[in-house]
Image (cartoon, rainbow, N blue to C red; front, side):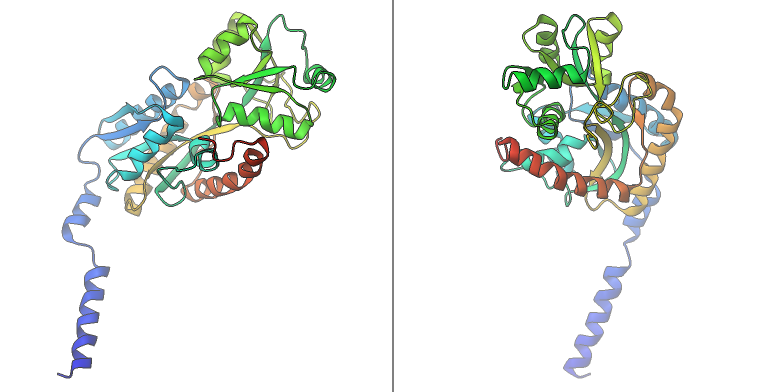
Length: 328
């Protein structure tokens, strides 16, 4: 055998070895899941997202015949949970409940993000969307978005809005409003949505953008009034409340989303099986999700990929203009 024929033979053997998975790999994929699955969440227990995680975890566990354990890894704007998920073994036994902000806002806000939202994850689905609403105290002088607009124009920098922190979806909703309405309203960041709501009720701030599930207790008690909804369409849970777009800013869209993903490199068969189980779980729990203020989406993995890439590009100029590009 000549040297060239030897190398051609060796190359062919290696190609076959690469193309044919090992029997162990095939068995592990076919047997999935053979042990409990961990669902990492970036928020503390008790948050509205915790209810979403547990609803899906219970139904997915029943569908797959295995326990799905919800594990909170809160902190640092979701980077702790995302980093742990990205570094986990790509075997389907670690998934993450993620948020639009973690995937699409953090890349512009953090100087050194310990994960790449495009390269480090295998998308499963954009599960639900959650409209952000503009809330004021029930005794506020503002009865409509027109009132806010007029007051902001007349008193630049005097009105205040609170958020759960710099770079959060609540903050970005306010910055997008300021950008589109051409008004100057002072942003007051808090360490979480709860303290921001406390100060809204106490009169320390004038307004805040907040997710419907988080605002529901105060809305039910009559402590706050909702002036507008940030999503392109009215919320099914607040059908009489106009959108910001309807109130004079066509094209305004500040809803956020929650979805599920896995570490990059997870076998396609496992991605497909988990995707199917989650989609079924969302369908089974749609009434409860609506009750909690979520709007079911149930996208494909490919649609989630496209959403992440598009929103990274659309939020970056807003963050840059607001002056907090790479601020964390």
